[in-house]
Image (cartoon, rainbow, N blue to C red; front, side, top):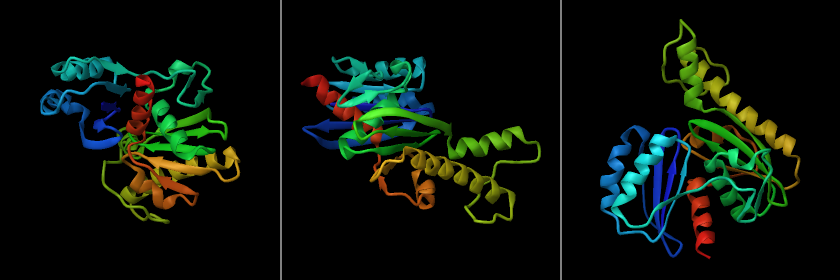
Length: 239
């Protein structure tokens, strides 16, 4: 089985056989034409399961890259209920497929109330109840998006790398520290709102390394939550 996670800035994929992760890869969304050549070197999968939040053009290119094999790409959409998770969104299908897959992976792992946090281009902070119900969540700009938006919207700021400090004394550190504090504060506040005894936070995403040291919560780092959720969905499709 081939799993594909097309996010806002990167595409990740994994080849799975019998539950074992045999190969993985990733590339920037801008380099998506190289995906066909990358896939051409892989054996033909029996099933291809994908999450795409990068738009229709990316979806078409993923289909083209997978055309080297006979099986079609199955793009998931959020359902009202799947793999033990109930979707509490007002319009279930409008929940991003990446968030849905991550919630399914989190529930399979935790089977308990938890906060599902993915720190990528955007940061999502989603709540799972003790009954496996997605009760709602937050979307906020990711760390890099916050930094870029400040640089683009403020005449006197230029993009520069900073480091986190409790009391920043230069602009680059002030911007980076502000983005970290805003993200960590949103996560901590949502954990407090969750209010479930024994709840933990499952943290994933490319910016997780930067955020994790600032979260004083019961926390578990789980990389590739979306791909793991796609694996579970794919297994259910086959059963």
